[in-house]
Image (cartoon, rainbow, N blue to C red; front, side):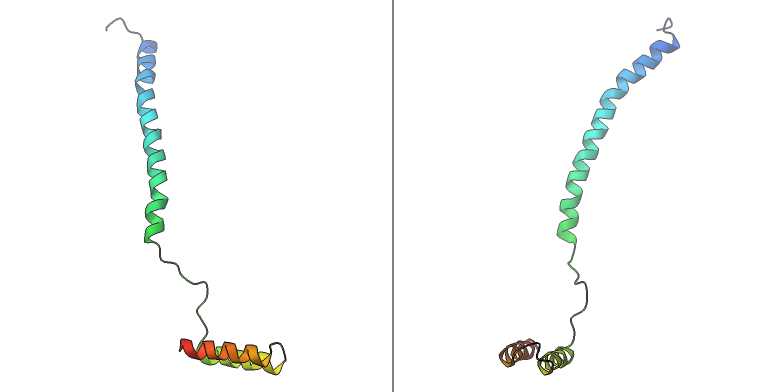
Length: 86
């Protein structure tokens, strides 16, 4: 081994680092593939905006009805749905 030049050592290190590099790439791919599966189970969906109160929803329905944007039957249906959710 004493007759090895620096170039021989560089080639030996490159040849030995190839399997290590391949193993590292495989490990990173497997880790990345598992990460979304774990995080998707632990996340809790959060609504974009809080639901308005029943009072606010009823006022909105009354406003829509007074402007003739919804019919009387639509108003009654939505009103009963709001009251059932309370």
